[in-house]
Each structure stands twice: as structure tokens, then as C-alpha cells.
Length: 482
Image 1 (cartoon, helix red, strand yellow):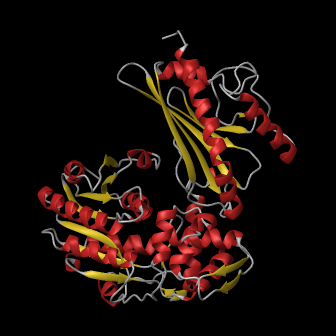
Image 2: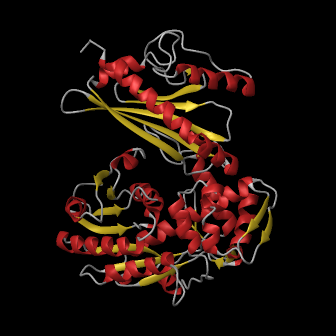
């Protein structure tokens, strides 16, 4: 790979398909640029040799640098996770992107759309089709590939089914469990997107992709149970529980972000079919069946590990368990401090010692540790002295996962609780010589009980963590050393 090779852009690289497409292209030794609204999410992936750019299709001023010098752009964004009004945002984003791509001289846009029947009357399905139409209205040639359910760790539909199957042996379900779709393996989808991007004959085409089986959601959930080694769930459909009504209890049964899950469930009114004859004429392939796709998804999941940052869905951050939710909940707090990152780091090194404790409300932290000892039998106890953290070090109910002095500390929780989580503390310098302290509490729930645990304790966690952050900032501000 050299600087003269064509540059391919993955726009929406922090999304599910995008964060899998980037390493797929890198493995093919292509020159890749990744763009997303959150630079930190891409940095957490640890991609090597990839140009990372922050860009937002709703902010046209950010698109020029992302598209500069690009030959092929994969457009993999949608606004379902943003809640109500997402079709209008998707139209606006596609219009901005098409215009900016033309100005940058992009030769081809490859768009991942969604399967939809004629006259689809749901926002989710119709918006995906409409986005393709908006892109095609621009001057840059577009190739569109429409897919239904994607089988892979992180796919919203896959994760909803995983959370249900892993923790609910008996389900009272809405009528959409009888709706059918042709699920496709992630690796087949990625290969076809790349194949179409490189074929001149695909220009301007709208293609459909589906796996070799057409299954109901009930059948897929039973197949997923086999993959998880669970007993076949008892599924009891309730005719009057519509997709719209069922979308309201998504917060209580799945860790998938609520707006995304609601938009997805709201679209489950129609049976979906894929006619892949045109696609296979250009890109011949035998796609994986459902069971093989699930096995591949779990195999890939085991290889998805964290780096220097908290990586969403990383297997080691979920306790190496397939039944822990891929998507996590979080509380994010930030505070400015007059002390430098080095001074804050030295102060933080006193954490959990008997002399310093937790900077504020230490008795509450100690009480939680005592409760954990009763439930679990033991913990590591307080740190014996202040000093640099070591990866693997255990104290109280924490274990040090990653430490970058002056930059980042990641602690994994060892509390006995229905899920896995941890705390990430990041230090960034500011222009005045001080620092910005950001604290994120992460939680990957294990089913309904893990979600209830999170929602019940969220207010208390927020209070205690704010006090911790204030106490750390005050203690660091008293640090006199440069």
C-alpha cells in the first residue's frame, strides 16, 4: 500500500457496519480513511494505518476534509439512534454528503440501505429507501445494497434477540415474532459491499442481499439459543401486542440503545424478501446459513478485545461472556481543574488508600465493598500505599485494566452484580495549563436484572460519582508540585 493507491472512505466508521468495514478493508491492504462524529470512538478501535477524521453529515463544514482525495466513499450512516424526526435528519445528511462528495471529486458512493416492501409504511424502512434516492439525485454515481437482518455482534436486531434469548427462557412476545426476513452474515455483507465498490458494471445499481434462508424472528431466536448453548425458549405470541406497543418496553429487556431499538421494532410489520439474482450475477457467492453466521459472529466476538480505551462491545470488558449485553449504559461526568494532568495523576494515585479513600463520601464506597464481601466472600482490600497503578492490580472491588500515567485509568468492577462494568478516568490538558477530567461509569447489563440494577442505582451512582470528581479536583488543585 502506498500514498498513490486509491483512497477509500468509510463514513460512519463508529457504527456497527462501519467499525467492521474498516479492518476488512485494511486486511485487503487498501488505503483507508475513517470518519465519524466521535473521534474517540474510532480511536478506541485501535486501527493501525487508518486516517481518522471527525465529520458529521449534518455539519457540511466538516465534510470537505473527510472527502478530500477520496475515490470511493462508503456511506454507512443513519439517524435512528437519535430518536424522533430521524427521517428528516437522514434526508438532510444525505443531501449534504452528496453535494460535498461531488465537490471533492469522489468517483463513487456505496450506500448500505435496507430491504423494504412496496409501500412500506414505517419510518425505519421507508427512510432507508428514501436516503438512497436522495444520494442518487446528486451528481456522484451511487451503488446501493439493501439488506435486512445482519447477523453479527453489534447488529441491533441481533443484539435484541441475544438479550431476549440469553435471559428469558419464557417470552410473552408481540406478533412481530412471526414476521420473516432473510438474515445475512456480516462477512458476506462486507464482501459484497467491497465487491460492488470495485465493479464498473455495478454503477447506478440497486441490489438486494439476503442469506440462503428466510426465517421468522421466532426461528432466529431459537437458532440463537442453540448458538448460546441455551435451552430452546418458550415463545408465547400475544396478538394485541403490536410492534409500536412492544417498542416501549425495550428499555427493560435489552441493552440496545432505546431509540435504535424502538425504531427497529417499529419497522417489524412486514415480511421482507431479497432478490439477489442481480447481485450474484456480478458478485458470485454462496452465503452462510443462519447457524453458521451465528457461529462466525461469536467467533469474531471472542477476538474483539479492548485496547487503551473503553471499546464498546469488547469481549474482555464484558467478562468474556456471550450473554452479557454488547451495548452498555454509561454515566459521563466532566470537570475542569486548575492542576495539570500530571498533578491530577499524582493525586489520583492515592485512590482507595486508607489515608485518602475515594476523595469524598468514602464511607459509602466502603459500605458497598462490605456488601460485596458478604455476597462474594472476599475482596482485595484497600491499597496499602499511594503510588502508580499497575495493570492487573486489585484493590477493594476494582481491578486495574489499563493505565496510561497522566492520560487514562481504566478500572474493571469486581462487584457481584448482574452484569459487567467499570470506570474510565481520562485527563486532558487545557490551554491554561490545567486539565479536563472526564469520568465515565460503564455498565454492560446481563438481561432484565442487569437493566433493573442499572436504573435503580443510577441516581445514587450519579451523586457519588459527582462527589468523587469534585473531591479529586479539589485535592489535585492543592498539589503544589509542577
